[in-house]
Image 1 (cartoon, one colour):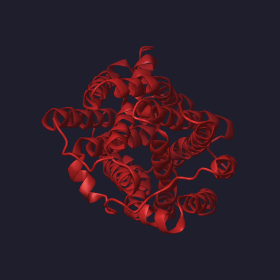
Image 2 (cartoon, one colour):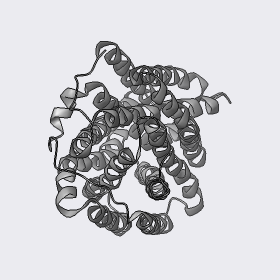
Image 3 (tube, helix red, strand yellow):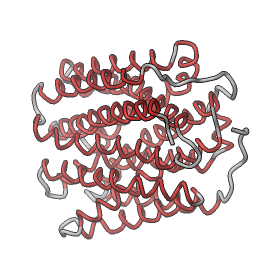
Image 4 (cartoon, one colour):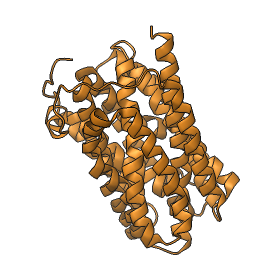
Length: 383
C-alpha cells in the first residue's frame, strides 16, 4: 500500500500530466485545423505536426544526464515555462513556415514533463500495482486529450482565446506539481546513460512505443482532418477524438490490471489485434451510429500499447537505467510520430480520405507480426 506522501505525489503527477495533456489535446487539432483552413495538403500538415516529434526525439537522450546534473524538478519547471511561452508564439507568428520551428521547440520542451513523470511513477510503484498505476497515468493523459477538443469548442478555432487558454493551463500545471516538491524523483548514477542499449535489450517494448507514436499522433493530429474530408463538421470531427479519449480513460485500468496478472506480451498482442480490427472496420461504419462505440473501444486498446510497454520497462530496470530505458521508449514514440504522421497524411492525399485508416491498419499489422517474431526479450540488469 503506497504511503500517504506517495499518494499525494502520485495525485500531483497525474494532475499535472492531465492538464498538459489537455493543452495538447486542444492545440494539436487547433493548429492542424488552422492549416487545413489555409488549404494546405495533408502531407504538409503532417510534416508540420511531425516537428514536435522531431524536437522530442533530438532532445530526449540528454534528459537523464541533465536531470542528474541539474535536478529533475528544476528541468521540469523550466520546460513548463518554455511551453507556455511557445504556445503564445503560435499566434504572434501566425505563419505555418515559422510553425515548423516553433513545433520543433515545443517537442524539446514538452517531452520533459512526460519522461520525468513516467520515471517518477515507476519509482512509486511496486511489482504488484505497477501496471495499474501506469494505467492511471495513461488514463490521466487521455482525459486531458479528450477534454482538449471539448475545450476547443468553447474557445473556438480563431483568434487569441485558444492560445491564451492553453498558456494559462500550463501555468496551472506548474502550480499542481509543486504539491509534490517534498518527494522529488531520484536518479542514481548506475546504468547506461545512452538509450541505445535498451533498444537491444527490450525490443518489443521499444517497438510498441514506435508503433504507438505513429498511430496515436496520426489519430489525434489527422483524425479531425479525416472527419472533415469525410463530410463531418469541424465540431463533430473534434468530438470523434473525445470519444477515442473516453475509451482511453475507461479502458486503461483493465489493461493495466491484465498487465499485472498475465504476461505483458500477450496484452500487447491483444491491443494490437483489436486496433487492427478497428482500423479495418472504421471506413465502413463512418456513416453508422456504430462508429461511436468502435472509436471508444479502439481508442482504449491503442493507448494500452504504451501503458504495457512502460510496465515492462518498470519491471526490468531501476534508477538511471530506468530513466535511459524510458528515454529510449519516448524516442521510439517520437520517431514513430515523426515518420507516421507524414506517411498517413500522404496516404490520405493518395486515397482521400480513407488512406489514413488503411495506413493505421498497416502499422497495427506490423506490430502483430513483430509480436509473434519477438517471443522473448533479452535480459536486462537486475532491478
